[in-house]
Length: 231
Image (cartoon, rainbow, N blue to C red; front, side):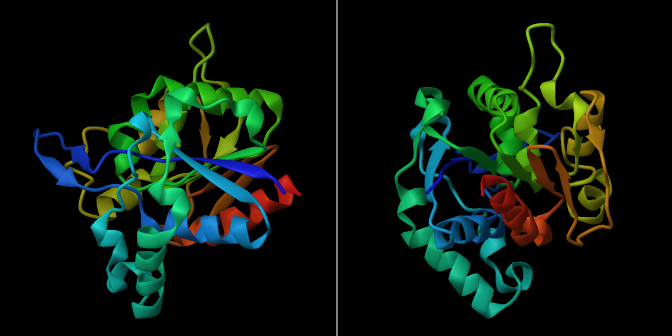
């Protein structure tokens, strides 16, 4: 049995470029699908958030129209409400990575607000990378890579091929002109080799011990690829 650390947002709001706050959180599919896949494989999951707050699910991600239908939405709502892992997170600042075998970060716009500047998230991801532990991130969860820097200021993920929510997808959605910054652009500015697939289609990149998924549609495949690395 492997122990998998979920680094999750604690923010239920995202500050837009005009100063208004948009209700958000984590995207349910990107957390629930991997959680269930890892547990079904016999692994244990611990959720960590900034301050140890219960991670908030973006209410939009629980809508049948965006969750993939009524059945999927009901499954996501049930997991969000009842999964003990979501209900009892630990404080990200207190996590000792030596107790874990892999790290996973789901997205949603919440990580754009808090994980994008969280030094503890960045340090944990950099340490996991350096130790060869499997690291998985999906969609806006890749915002947590931004504070992962070496003492010389270089992002350790710069040598890796990754994908995440693209600038094009952000513009095709509702936030391309409202976002204070765009994820793909910021990752590329950090020197990361960003690979953009077709909008809102499953696209996963695997580079050594790093698995990344572009969007919610990539959640299952990303989980499957991470399970292969965990063994």
